[in-house]
Length: 78
Image (cartoon, rainbow, N blue to C red; front, side, top):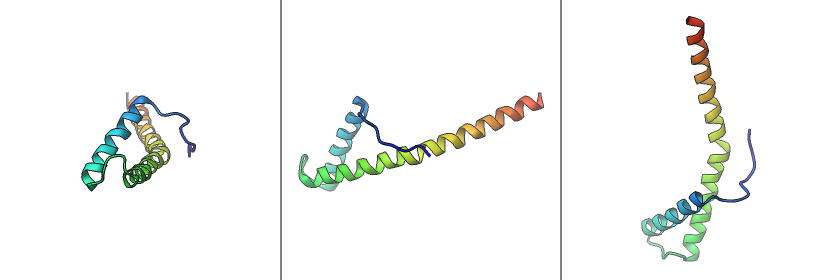
């Protein structure tokens, strides 16, 4: 399994986090920039990062293996 943490965030990630903060504030009725919102955003970010670092590589490997198996079986049938 691949493990680790990103060392720097891209502009896209920062923009996504800002949008997520705005939506969380609106959905939860929390004041933007409040300590509650910052805590909720931090928790949400940790969950998303964990999913990306733990689930996505395994899912990608499974998809690659399935595609490789399909390509191999097509080549053998030709």
